[in-house]
Length: 415
Image (tube, rainbow, N blue to C red):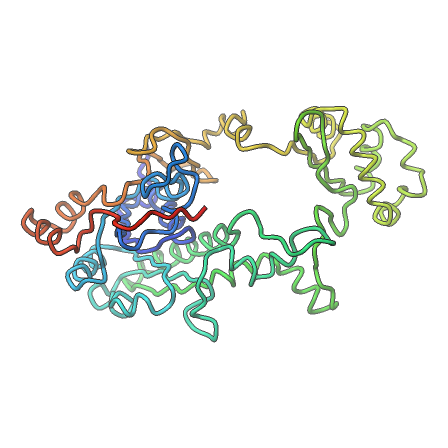
């Protein structure tokens, strides 16, 4: 295999939950050496998230945690202890990149903020990602991506017009912010290559999320129009929705973008009379009678499987797609052909599927070779091989509780 694009890059990862670990995962899957710093007394939230192996909660049984920590190494280290902080700073000195996703001020209290880290490593690139940024009236806001969904406006704009605001199914901002972080890190690495200087990258996950609502914010600012909740409907396309198909809980998505596609759609459904029906003949008429049109389309789609509807529509130039379940996604022939899902063997979970990066670099492709680590799995390698500690040093740290060994409180699953 060709040399990885980030081969030789070293990362000390103090981040947790989802937004931070996704950044270091992308670096690790393209060759970087990533050391995750955790401890048993303050678990990464993702270790408490379902699904768990055999539905039995445990700190090393979460597939959610495993998904975002491929190719990484993990040590157990209590950085609140003086000796723990000393070891953490040695990792900072070793690293090219330091990442953290704590509430603003936490790393400063621990003596591991950017100013402290660049004293031992002036060339370090330091990523700090948080809910609403490191300064401002709401900088101490605590939460996860679901809370950012709400304050960013996503919950208010998701759901049916006659329903309450809806919690988006995922922590949406957690899947937006990491890509901004990666772009910034790559820029900082290029700058350091030229100047030898490090950089502090400070990110607000809320601001990342808000950028995806830019057209609607402009519409509100310029025209005074509030987006509101629209269900599956679009401002300009009709029909546009999810329609029931033959089978149990089977559905298909259809989006008719223009008048030509509308003519094709009526031909495929066997209803050419809809093109001259005053209720549906124009886009304005269709929008005014959308409930009735959706009902009629649903009656037609129920006679077919979603695969049949998708095929008929796409062959006629109309955008349509099967609403796939997780099981269907894992067996999707296109995903298999592109080797998107990679099976790795985890020490506790065993063999299960991991996402490969959603992009392919022709000269330096990704390599998923190692499942996510258990907590402290790489203590020996990191403490001895990377930091040069002796067995006596490690024994002393174990005795002092600097290297943690077990979770001694009742385990509480988040889900």
